[in-house]
Amino acid sequence: MELEVYNINGQKTDKKVSVDDTVFGIEPNDHAIYLDIKNIMANRRQGTHSSKTKSLVSGSTRKLKRQKGTGTARFGSIKNPLFRGGARTFGPEPRDYSLRINKKLKKLARRSALSYKMKENGIIVLEDFSMETSKTKDFAQILKNFDLTGKKVLLVATRPDANLLLSSRNIQSARIVEARNICTYDILNANSLLIAESSLEEIQRINSAN
Image (cartoon, rainbow, N blue to C red; front, side, top):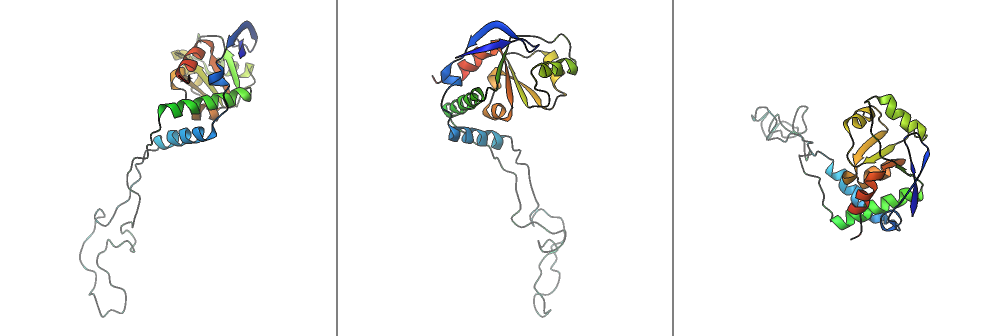
């Protein structure tokens, strides 16, 4: 399979690049995608939620009233969960939500996501470029050249330079990642992928079936 190579002005160049069908042209595996995204989202959770039990709430442990003869329910401590300012019953505690899946499954999920994008014509190959300045308007102009203004864009580069990172950070709909860090969630969350020509080889090497 071959793809046209574009320059940052949105124009086709004379070059074409070959892409590996085993990475960009497989039959997508939806279950592998589900498991990988579930793993990614779970690993992003902090798990720092917490609440105080009776042993953690400050307050006197003095018995509030005698056990019997009051005609009402018995109460032991001011820290009773039924009282305002009391403890929490079965509340959340800090925990680790992280999951683990094997590397072959993660590769399959990424190949499936890339194949979906290829079917949707959502992949654009850019010839290698560098930003001379770190101005947001320069990066916004590149998106405008491809009619991607306001759309979710993932730009994949081998080693993004500082000017490129600085010029894109104020555009909320755009994200830049290194080819080695590309993941299933980022691929599917973007409307379009802008892939630098030099990073294609690394993407195919990392995600090859072998």
